[in-house]
Amino acid sequence: MDSFTYVNIFETKGLEYLLLLSFWVLFVYLVRYLSKPPKGRPGSR
Image (cartoon, rainbow, N blue to C red; front, top):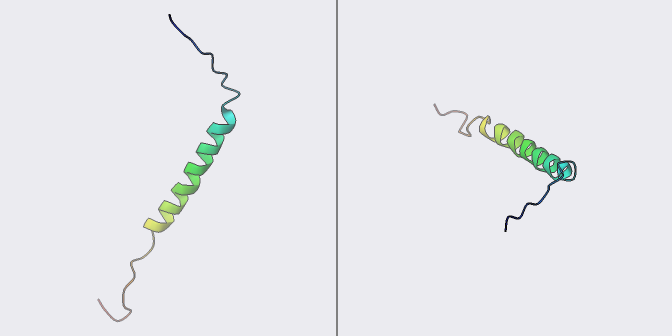
């Protein structure tokens, strides 16, 4: 009993676009977080 389900790629495009958009938003926040200068006292070295 081989079962095969046909997946229409055009029906799943909306979900793929939402996943891609959320990935890019999280990636931008990650890059901003990592590129912040470290907090420290202004007079300390």
